[in-house]
Length: 110
Length: 113
Image (cartoon, each protein chain N blue to C red):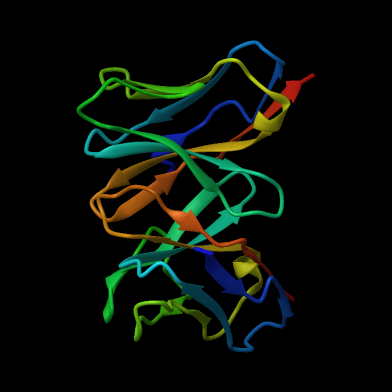
């Protein structure tokens, strides 16, 4: 049973606008939440993370928000750039294990 | 260059023929793990290792074996591959946990006929 879900398989955004990628989880025991970006024919690369004791973490154009009561995680990219076009995976950690979502394919239109 | 190296990049095999996918990292990382990526299912953890001689099952360990005899290497072994193990496999490593930053290899596309 999928413990981390990304319900939007794809998202298209105009260059310069905000991209919002969403993720839901079911297990309240997760310690950390992470976002990874994946280009075709490459392995995923780490983007940003947030501890379960925080509700926001920011790194340049990327901000992750955590709503524990709703068991919801989101990634905001502002402004979006064509180079951001990739598949984005959210992931959650519990102990020594990682649980990944199914991914959202983001297309940023120039 | 710091990296996680997987080999081979592509592999086609037949049911029942034992195979090994190698994974090596040059960052002196303690934590290493294997994942498979399937359409509609995302990345699922197969096995992980906290250090040499310490391995544990992830979410989908059935049909796989691993070993960690040296810190840098973490091979994935399929003793008797079956078609449902056709998938894209990724190896990843991290300095320690709960350091959450995993470094991934480029992937191995396996087809079992």
